[in-house]
Amino acid sequence: MMVQTLPICYTPTEHLDWNRLLDRFDSHWRVLLSHLVLFGFIYPYERGCLPAFVMDTLLDRLRSEAQPPPTVGRLCQGTLLSKVQYAIDLDHWGYEYARLLPLKEKARL
Image 1 (cartoon, one colour):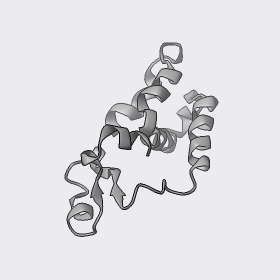
Image 2 (cartoon, one colour):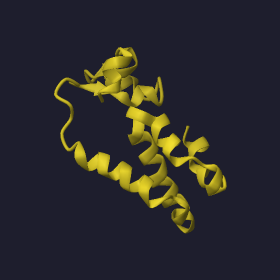
Image 3 (cartoon, rainbow, N blue to C red):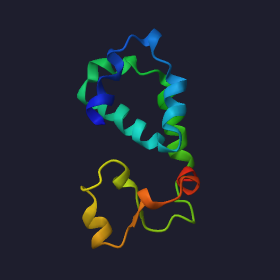
């Protein structure tokens, strides 16, 4: 997923619907934020192609949720990115498997 998202700014800006992109990531907006932050690290000269309103929106969301939702418990959402990389978290460290949560519950995270 990282390889596909990082070159996002090589799409001409007038052809990229940033609001739609924000909507598509929906409750997984942190994934988009992490990709955009890494894009700015990897390609510092290209940071200007990221619209300020997108970064402001994502950073506002980050600031607004300083505490985890009370119903989450020890949940590992890393499994939504990689099924195997987070196996130790599930098998040995007591985290719950986010892929097994009902879709309605995932939307609240």
